[in-house]
Image 1 (cartoon, rainbow, N blue to C red):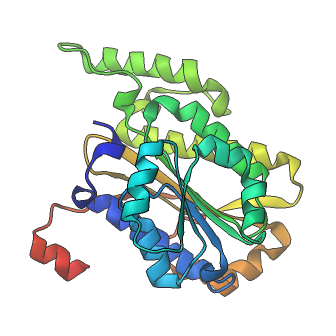
Image 2 (image 1 turned 60 degrees about the horizontal axis):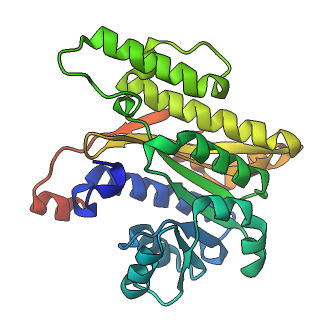
Length: 285
């Protein structure tokens, strides 16, 4: 089962992750109003994040992209607000045409959530992150979700020893991603926790390399989280593009340093909510 196939009502850790995203945006909102931004994401057929962005901040420039045309037709039927635009567009096309799309909405600040679920396409996903970073502007916010389940590197063979399995996964990781981290890859990188950190490191390095051609602009992390709602572990990384000389002013105005669940030094926090009864969930909500 892929992460994208788990029903939303069973994904309570993802729900917490989305709420943390909204909390991070509420801090950024003190500098640049989220209601004035262009928000881009993969809406799916539930539009959960679009509902939150619109309800909390009043944002009306909402763009949902989807690579499957038949899903776009479902989206048009299911979208909760008329201000949501649904486009038949793959994430690679979005990354390649980000400047043109920004222009369509008035060249405003962009908040983009690249919600990747397909573990077989990690290299391509990293390339798309790089393309977005190359076209980013100051105060844009980028959020990336990536599947970091080590089992997606190589499945367990019945009767196989764990040591042999991990060696195979290590070989797979070195073969496919040795160029994505500037260090030796080891066995700790194929553990459940280690692979989440490895994914975060790849995203960090990819963005930094992409910004090497943009003097003065850098990507400042706001929060990184990992969670599991099925057998899959997902990683989310959220950050904003800033200029070094404006960093302290941004931190002071947003008060992100006061938010205990922020990750301003690339800390990676694990979300692990216990199974809740309906009454417990309603109470917490």
